[in-house]
Image 1 (spheres, rainbow, N blue to C red):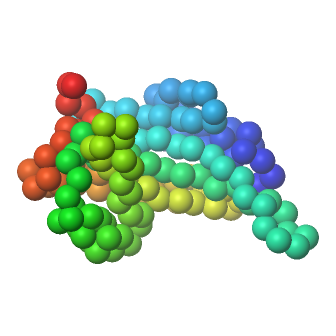
Image 2 (cartoon, rainbow, N blue to C red):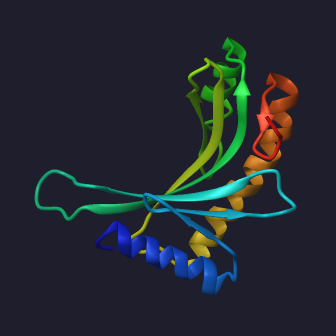
Length: 152
């Protein structure tokens, strides 16, 4: 692929021209897409990693969707994340600790940008979105917290 800028431009073109989606372009190479009928949104972040030897750096597309925020941490939740949250075919659930000690949960899938095509991007995006949209309701009932669309 070559660079983060090239990967971002490629994904942006696929989303806007190929899939006819309305996107928001943010700082630090971030793209987001929101849908009125879903309780979450999808975010695209781009990173580059160098490997040992003479191999060229590779660019990755991180596709993420918020699941819940302000979730009280518990052993039961950590166990769910480590077992069920990592067992999906495409992607996994990640937890991040907030300053107040609660957890932020998101769904993540990573693609190599070098040979990315629109079908692969679309499949990954919709899988991430719908999985997170389903999980926010399921996990909120079991563990608490707020969905991405819920007011503070």
